[in-house]
Amino acid sequence: MGEIQIVKNDLAADEKVNVVGKIIAEDRPLITFIGSGQKFKIEKEKNND
Image 1 (spheres, helix red, strand yellow):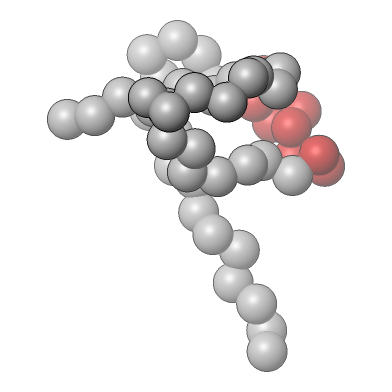
Image 2 (cartoon, rainbow, N blue to C red; image 1 turned 180 degrees about the horizontal axis):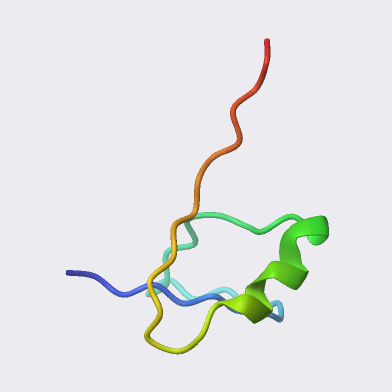
């Protein structure tokens, strides 16, 4: 099983790190509800196109 990190600040580019997504500004306050070791799910927003 892999590891995921949520970073609250911009970091310098690193070829050893893969960025898989970004959390939009309006959803960033939700990060405070995720505790250490707690399971959570990130879902892609479905468009109504």
